[in-house]
Image 1 (cartoon, rainbow, N blue to C red):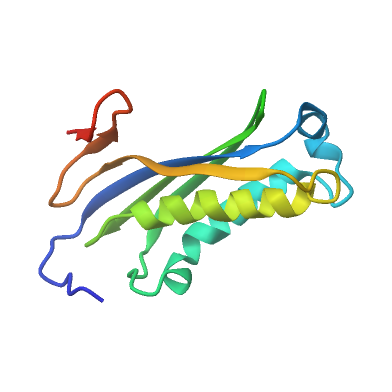
Image 2: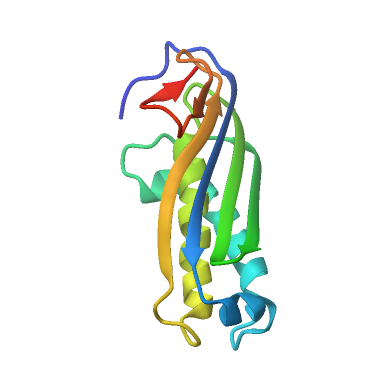
Length: 148
């Protein structure tokens, strides 16, 4: 692990997203699947994933998380998952935000696989982060690289 002991403790915020592509019939049934409410389970899995990041990612520091929000939004071609993680720490919360989305997407896949095996998890990415030595960053899909 990298030594972060010299870094100041600051407020860190990270947001991530991903998508799960599904058929329209499956999207319409998300609350009534054989295993139960897929949206509720995915949200909880995302929160749990953020909390377990340092267990899942070998060199990630364990962070004291101040807040984890996970939203699971049905859209036309599937589901959009978004996470927002806030931590007051010496290192950023980007991995926690990404882990939240990944865990939520995997849980959603597990919930829908009985009715749609060809679901696809896609576009896992960091959307923005703030705090720390490198400052603020927001994804800019219109240009090569990112804006600060």
